[in-house]
Length: 106
Image 1 (tube, helix red, strand yellow):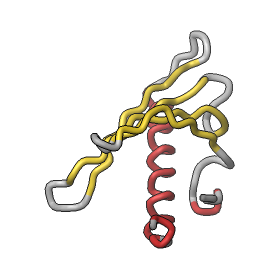
Image 2 (cartoon, rainbow, N blue to C red; image 1 turned 135 degrees about the vertical axis):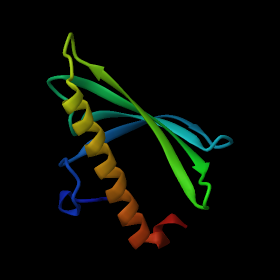
Image 3 (cartoon, rainbow, N blue to C red; image 1 turned 180 degrees about the vertical axis):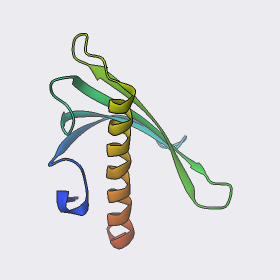
Image 4 (cartoon, rainbow, N blue to C red; image 1 turned 45 degrees about the horizontal axis):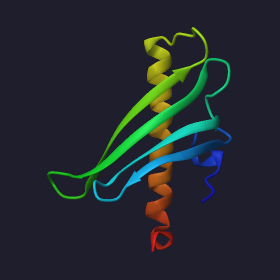
């Protein structure tokens, strides 16, 4: 799947590595290992996601992120919020793409 930066995504490219998939518990984990915000201060970001039924129907994705910094680098609250917001932007972009192209999920 190719989603361009024109779609509102914050980075030119990112490379992810799948760490684990648990079909029985509807969860998966992966790591951002290249591109995006990685470089001077960040070595990688690991994500854990679990799909759960929403109270009013549908599905919720519960997510957690773990930041691996390079050396003694420290992130401010504002920088962490910006990283989380950029991840949310990516999720929203992927969601919009999938909703507009639901036939690719078959």
